[in-house]
Length: 390
Image 1 (cartoon, rainbow, N blue to C red):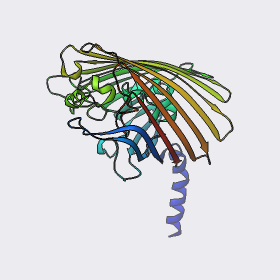
Image 2 (cartoon, rainbow, N blue to C red):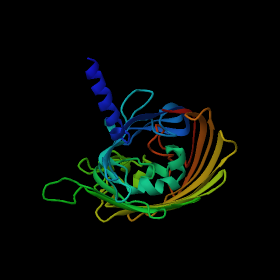
Image 3 (tube, helix red, strand yellow):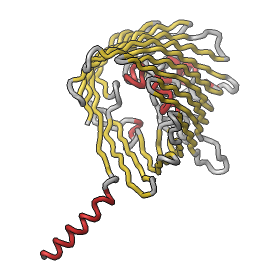
């Protein structure tokens, strides 16, 4: 028995260094709060019919950050190469239900290889380069979904992830790196049908960060697409009812093409951000040749009053052009947040949005929330919440 214990101890002593670089981490975020919206409507998502209107109070999960739990890990394969994986689940803290359309690991699910010398290759359900390199320059990328560009029309708030994707991220060359992603549609005899392609580049050096990305998806709201029905797209019937904000002008397009660029600059306790995105949808509203173009320009900033208190303020201007209509909808949106950290892992916050629409449109603060489109050209959305990380 003593010899067996001695052998086990010796084996463990030699084995320990081999596993020193291997790890699996359990992590998560729980974000909960109360939302208030004025001029709100309740809308039938099948017919577009309005079934109610007025002020609305609602409990909402995952706004500052999506509520989630996940597992991520690495295995050292030697020669500077590691195997990596990440599985991330999204959930509603108030109902306990799954988010992202009921997917078990709807936020992320991938496996791959990484090397400091050659870069990283991953396969699975992943964020596209628009999210990776442009989102950090937006206010919603730093302070949550409430500050998304209207209806998250450019996916800078990752309203959808991409299935069946292969992604490569290069090493950093003096702060400059690039990435490329292709997602397979998987349809027999039609290699590109339902596919997605995207690329991005970013540069980080001291206080400066700049990122730019391109994204293209075929039939983005088709269940057979790599984007699928995970996003905020609506049926043409609902869009025709005029009750879904910007997506009133999009419906079920045959393709989505987006370009974005942005940057941030840090000055001590202050950070300034700028971004611009352009999204184009082909055959919008089911009309062949009809194109809808949506542009977003944003400026925002944050300032840390104390190590525990941060304030942020921003403005987004959105304008829409569609071939089939004469009016040109425009949306101006003011965003504000105050955050107080109770500890390194827990904070409380208040945030608010005011949106004003012109050009025949009605206000609709981020379509992904429980509040519906405004009954007027104006809408206010406010929230108080608490976030805990583990």
